[in-house]
Image 1 (cartoon, rainbow, N blue to C red):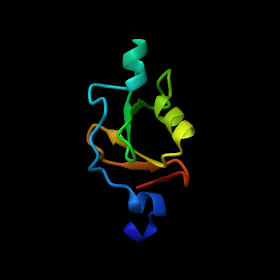
Image 2 (image 1 turned 180 degrees about the horizontal axis):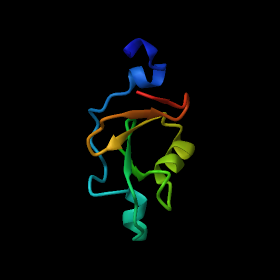
Image 3 (image 1 turned 135 degrees about the vertical axis):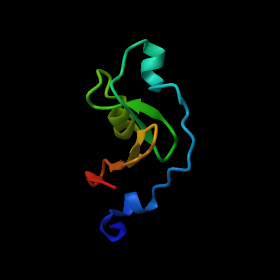
Image 4 (image 1 turned 30 degrees about the vertical axis):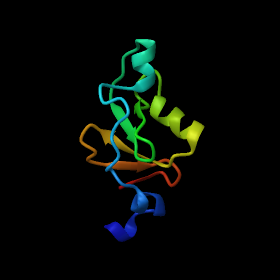
Length: 87
């Protein structure tokens, strides 16, 4: 399976700590709810998923170009925004 992963997923490490382990960084500031969380594996930003009002995880990718996020907490799966692939 590892051979099928895109270059971004192969390089991504989930060793980084979450910047805001209690929730979506922007939603916490705005006081808005989220449905599920995603963590950027480049910088540790925690954002809400696309089913949430803010869609902050995707907005973080669009603003930074950081390619891979993981389900948070747990990091059971990863998503590459660039190649639109799971890992």
